[in-house]
Length: 337
Ligand SMILES: C=CC1=C(C)c2cc3[nH]c(cc4nc(cc5[nH]c(cc1n2)c(C)c5CCC(=O)O)C(CCC(=O)O)=C4C)c(C)c3C=C
Ligand SMILES: [Fe+2]
Ligand SMILES: [Fe+2]
Image: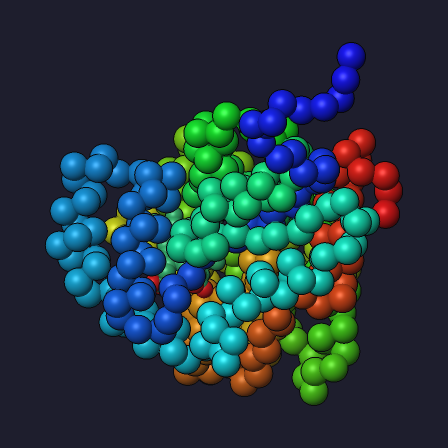
């Protein structure tokens, strides 16, 4: 018996474990062309828009992609940073902060479901680097077919074309995980302590979904409600839930964030703090829709004080929370770091 490989044997790198953190994706630039390319891919995903292709594609190509990109590009330009789109920059920073956190044999990388870096490309790169096991981590605390499932689908599609597949695990939703609730509660408490006003109410604004997805069995709505309930219990005060970013004509989950913010001052809530616990990174939907437009809506309706509490992002508490969750999922694959 010999360990020698035949002369034409491909090189086999020493085995490693890959960790791929995944987020939604974002345009490459805050201009109409880049936003159009991004929206064309995103809104063609049948996990996102569940309308028959023959009906939806003409509406998407004929109406949405002609009108929305210019408007959205302007919105992106209001929040764009020197290092790019907030979502891209923060996701990169999260991956950077997690490097080395799980020992020398875990290679940490990041990918986006739409646009770049593409999930398939990063899986191929991890495998080429010797990762025979990969933990896929879509960073959505609340499970949703339109986010978690489609990210995993894209990864599985890549695996389907591989001769030598890595073993894979996927990060489960963490909407009720004590590490996540603790991190949220800590960020709210620290933020409130630093404010120059005491809010009458804390509002948790989650990304919306078409209402029918709840009846179809998507647990997203329940996960959002549970996150808010657990956060309220930890804070010892009410956390009101609302759903933002309505898209299209169908009925979406209610109450809507914008109508809630417009109604609250009339109900005596003049000072408010808003957080978006469903987003692991600040992005267009939080920085422009909530922190800019939400504030305008609330103040125009008679509110006097508005504060937007940032997402956990790559804050030390946010990274520590991810380290705890991911370390648990890596159990048995690596020795504890
Ligand atoms: C049918 C349309 C949409 C569904 C369903 C949807 C679900 C969904 N989205 C997120 C997270 C994000 N969405 C973001 C942007 C965004 N979302 C939609 C539409 C749907 N989202 C659009 C058209 C856009 C683009 C922006 C715009 O033109 O207004 C983002 C931000 C991306 C960025 O670049 O910053 C995130 C994040 C979740 C969590 C979700 C379901 C639970
Ligand atoms: Fe969205
Ligand atoms: Fe939006």
